[in-house]
Amino acid sequence: MAGSSHGHTPAAWTGVTIAIIGFCVAGAFMVMAQPVGFWAGMVIVVLGGVVGAVMRSMGLGQPKRTHAVPHVAPAATREPAGAES
Image (cartoon, rainbow, N blue to C red; front, top):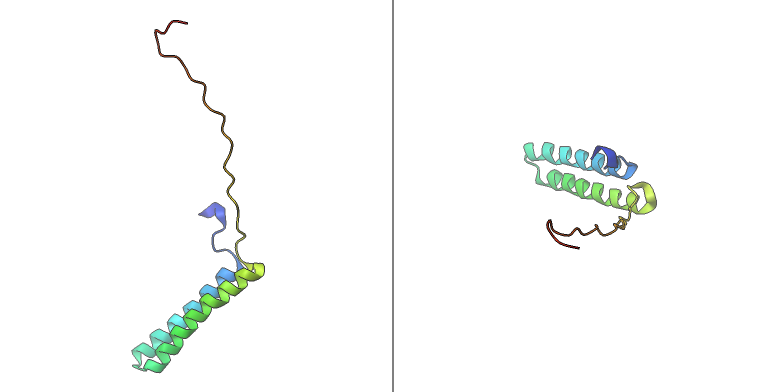
């Protein structure tokens, strides 16, 4: 993971930050027994995912790489031991 820069993009940081704020809001209102505030926090969590996806589509996310299959030459076949040529 260290070599792939997984998650080190503005889209990832922004989406996760908004989602964490939403979880904190939902948790605080859950402790206060306020269902409307809890669901508002959950809406903020979903908003974080939407913002991250929109930013990724704008080019601020991890670029997609195509994995090319390397061409490997076939291995030389050897005759079994004791075979006569």
